[in-house]
Image 1 (cartoon, rainbow, N blue to C red):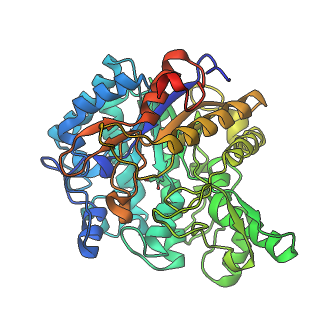
Image 2 (image 1 turned 30 degrees about the vertical axis):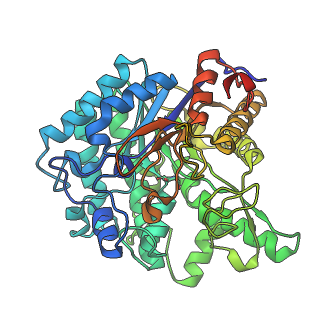
Length: 467
Ligand code: IFM
């Protein structure tokens, strides 16, 4: 049974749009507009965290989490995206951060978790280079207000998702369906990261600076050369396109050459989307390379650029899959952290170190969706989630023992919440939320995590004393 090493942080994560609800004065976001057009669940109330935040802080204290990762709603702080700052909106995060610190919980703040103010989308959104400046101005407002108290600043959450699902697949807000547009957006998100990271290095002296890409390792479905080649391309399209520029390695040449040949994107610096000096700007010093990890994917020649889950999402899953249809592969996380440790060590950004020290890895999201609800006794028995979290934290600690420089694991998610286009059907929480009443119930997995945090060791799941 592994102990949590000294300095290792175990906590939980959420994002603004998925939990907060509208609340007073928040501007419209691209997700409000997108979900309203689709019909179905939306973010007007979600977990009503904007009202119930004190209760949620107390729940975190009850679990004993070391760190809490949340995101700021850009449209709550700047309802029009630029210009006027809402004192009420900023005050909400000011009180939240103080409330965390009062309870001994480290605040990890994500600046952008996909909820662009609609006012900025109306001006071209992330498709325009202007978005980089808007993002820098928004970052400066937050650094000024919270720079003395936030422990870790994460610039972008999962830029692949925002660029690809939001601008190429039409699945996520704002619903774009153009490959070139998605790669343009990706470039601007990466530039936004670089510029914000530099700004935070100077203006948020109490905090470490990082970014939270999602990494989905692919492996060849067979050893046929076409599948091996597809897995290489998938890794480039899905992971290296983001990790490499962030770490100062530039856009991966194999994928860039293919995009150029297909006529969809020119990744060379020049007078197009990618300007002279952009790659140096993206390669800003960072302290923390976050990784959001959920699963790995077998890749064959038919899915070189297809990230769809192995199984259709839904409740009816065989063992070994979550309700998202994602295969449960904790060993994939161990291997990934070891690979990322090597990549960081071999990269210019990793060698130079961050503004506050060497670059460290953190699992900024990892978790599972199963829809277990309260039984007749009110208790939520989610043994599968407990096992999932146990096995993944164990994999992280194994990677650390083998030399990976990782020292945090944040479970997705603290609360059941709005899973974007899948609405409230997918439940990732350590804490169950009754969306009709807002009532929170700590699930068995949350109680187990509290025991782990109290004892600072990975107590076995299903310990009869705790059941
Ligand atoms: O809910 C999302 C989160 O917003 C980003 N990472 C993946 C989670 C589960 O799909």
